[in-house]
Every structure is written in C-alpha cells, then in structure tokens.
Length: 256
Image (cartoon, rainbow, N blue to C red; front, side):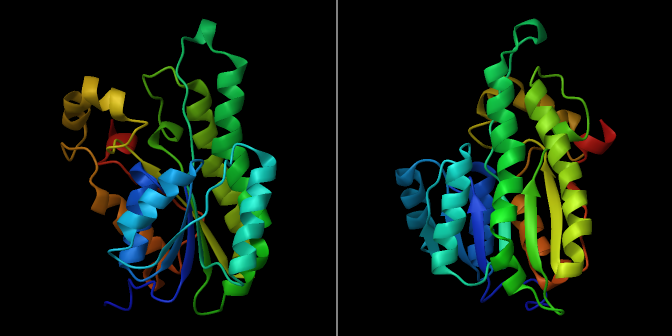
C-alpha cells in the first residue's frame, strides 16, 4: 500500500508552488518522495518555499513569470537543462480578477486568460520531450492542471475571466488526455473549492463561515485534502485515470 501511493524517485514541477494550493501540492509530493521544482514569479518566494520544503525532502527553486510567453519557454529550457525526464507537471500558477460586468476591463480578461489557460498549454507543449522520456508502459508521466469549481458551476462572484479560464482548462485537460494518452502521459485536472490561500483570503474573511456551512461537509479545505489528491494522481494508484476533472471542494461544486 505504501508503494501504491509513493512517488519516490520521480521528478516534478509545480508552478505557482510557493503558496496556497501550489505549496500544498508541492509539500505532498516532496513528502511522498518526489524531487520537486517549485516555480513562481518571485525568486525570493521560491527560495522561501524551498527552505520550508527542505525539512521533508528535495526541492529546487526555479522562478519564472508564466504570464509571459518567453518565460514559459525559458522555464521549460532551464528544467530540460537539469532533467532529462519530468514525471509530473503540475500547472497551478493562476490569477483572478473581479469587477462588475459593465466595468470589467480588457486587461482583467487578458491577464487571467493568459496565465490560467495559455500558460498551462504552452508549458505542457514545451515540456513534452521530458514527459515522453519519463513515460513507461507501467508508469505514465502525469500532467495535473489546477482548475476550479468556478469552472463547474456559476459562482456568485463577478470573476468572469477566471470562471471562463478554468472551464476552458477543464476541457483542455480532456483534449490533451485524448492526445497524449497513447504516448504514455495522463492529463487530469483538480477543481478546488475553498482553501486557505492568498487568492481566497478576502472572500474567506468576509464569507468563510457561510461558505463552510453551505458545503455538504461543512468546512473549507485543508492542506492534506489537496496533497492527497495530487499524490493519488501522481502515483501508481492513479495510473489508469486520465481526462478526469476531480472536484476537491467538500461537495460544493456538484451539489450546491
């Protein structure tokens, strides 16, 4: 059973891995035995995250601003220079923007769409040689896209580009799963609900108790909830799962 959920000896890249959901996933993968490259826009945040993760295992900082096309390519090139194989790619870096419909700016649309939808595609595309090199018949390489329950149901918040980008990422996950499955690469998405993160901080401060009470499980997410599903999808336990969008939300996205 320990081997079933182990990722020992595997190499992973987690974008947006310095805080919130990304850090939860990075910590879970390190604790399960993977060597994890942590990327985010700020070098100092990467170094701080790696310092925190070092108590559990091996982590390496690899900063990049994935809102920029050239930075997606640079990150892929830097990783390729260090690793011939990439077993796990977690596309988690993301942004949101909220404004009333009549006032929603083009900049808020483009910023969110570029980071949340374009960058996962570009980074997956650029790292295909390393993912293919890691894939075997017994153990496929894994791509995990971090979507949102806002891509599954209609949120009451006016975050139009965020919801559209996450719904798009969910469908991109299915498209890539069909394309890459024959090449030994699984592609799945996690759709988180409310978790403690910088992106959710203001919402949880104002409405956290109401959100928790609306969930069938009557609470918000905990770090182990996110780590668990990421380790499952990355390990032998999840090797026959592809094209799935898994809500991790206490039941909100599918019942509320």
